[in-house]
Length: 363
Image (spheres, rainbow, N blue to C red):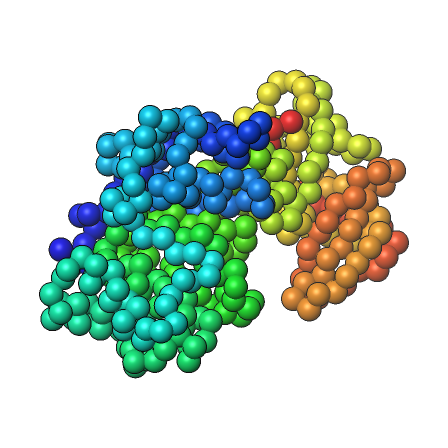
């Protein structure tokens, strides 16, 4: 099989997966299916259970409940787990774990030598992989002679050259500076597009997850809050936690009454929204760039426009950050505007809401 052939890439199924330490559930009844060749990111704050989940997939931690299956075969359960060395997986850690006394080429060749592949094949595979990760000219250098980004590429090359059934990455960019992290996000996605390894990636950085992933699994307190494609996760969060963790947002709490939705000192027509209940409380996630500010309300906008006072502003170069409050209301809304839209504190303005960009979430 040649590297890049998707025939070997595996399906992972996590069913009711739990891991309890004492009285603390690090992972609590987690279920998800990962398709062959799919790139999934486990995203969440520290302590949410994402690294424990990754370590259970790798075989380093045995679950206290549920199962992990690869291509239909159970590899982890409460009864027993397949040892990590028999799972045909590769794992990349925060520290890269490349050997300082070996050259770049020797580091990348290490796993192939353990598999007793002939020398000629090793040379061919190593050179091909180094060319792919753009390190072909650095094969004879030692890790101390490389930048952080180059060391990370060595770790990636070593993990991928053995053609794993599943590639696991545990916050691999956390030791890099901001510019290198941004560059390596795209590099990791480029390599995934080249080889299509089934990949599980742990990060607390939403930017990394958004750039690299086919789908993102947002975790909180050991549980799966939502798993979705990046765009769907951002525009249609299902819970308060997801809405607040994935980018900035405004949470608007209201109550449906007849054909109106009543908020604090303002209301909007129920008819411009789809799929709302007939009555009861409702909460919307509204991103700052989904509200626009105007000096005047156009005639066609009257039903979704609200008068407000500008209470704070900050100029950030690429945009203005405004904070506005509907007249008579204690609600404070964050609004992002272009640099040319200059308003002053205490200006009375019109807020225009776009119902298509207001996502109802769990009340």
